[in-house]
Length: 139
Length: 139
Length: 80
Length: 80
Image 1 (cartoon, one colour):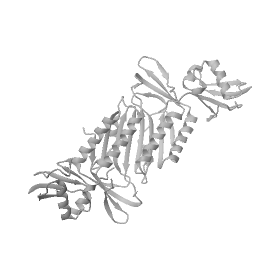
Image 2 (cartoon, one colour):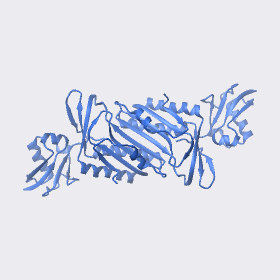
Image 3 (cartoon, rainbow over the protein chains, first blue to last red):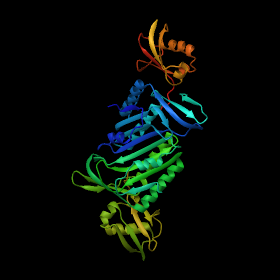
Image 4 (tube, rainbow over the protein chains, first blue to last red):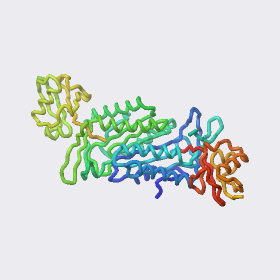
């Protein structure tokens, strides 16, 4: 079972969270990224995520493997949407279980930071002005 | 509507999470504390949380007010169980929405840390050996 | 003599054998009230590890004991 | 001449007008291959802002172009 996956349709969080529940884990940290109605001062109507799927899945899995090695956690999962999303849609979900909260928070933060920095997924935003474009942030 | 509350029965997370969803918020961080099967090397059978309810609710609300003032967040909620809990039960839930993930993580961490340090709630654990006791941690 | 209600929680309640009691005391402040009740019930927790609340709000150990007030001694908390 | 398949994503795909193309090239390495295709399609992104992958794994710009390989140019990512 992969711990990182792409989803081309809305997904349920509850089964992901349940898969991380366990008698050993006293702490659970999750992070969600939602589509906002604005970005850097511009009104956003909707967006699309595109991925280089094979590499994104491998790199996402590597990020979670790194988190499992670096932090005292029990388990972790991440799902990232691709395709068309509307305002308020869930774009990415990260969940981490651990014995203690320090590790749960640190790993959850690590995973979302690394996924945003390294996993080949791109965001295409449509703006209220009618224009649109790919986001290719500087380093 | 209070942002902090005590619950004497299991509660659903989904309505709490939904209440924090909004078009302005791009980031959501949550923390959950579950009942573990062990604590400091001892096998735990179950536990009970007791609160000084009036003061716990006021102090919990104060913690969330502080988080709203300190961090660039949109909203936050915390619910803490009281009464008898079994292994694997949810003991505490914290959720924070924000425009950006830095503030969401920082506020979520602040709330759980302060609730654990200041809110008058006490844990009574029953151990596999048949004994039991209140936890009154040092400093 | 000042009359007040004292609330006990967690290990203090176990030691006192009750969750509340009506007290009449000459204690000048909340610190003295706790020491008086500590002697009576054999509480092991020293004041340094407790907080005190009056009528549902945190208070100072040097505060005087008010007639008709509700005093709570708060052992170290362990929620979360 | 080495034959390979090149994959384009995001703004590179928009600029190239396609998501993949079969190329035949004398490029000695992946860096040269990108510069060749950049000239052809008018890509604005310089190599310094890209990563490169071969057959589904990140690669080095100095790696040679292998016959039959699948090369992907990775613009700055923006997931999350």
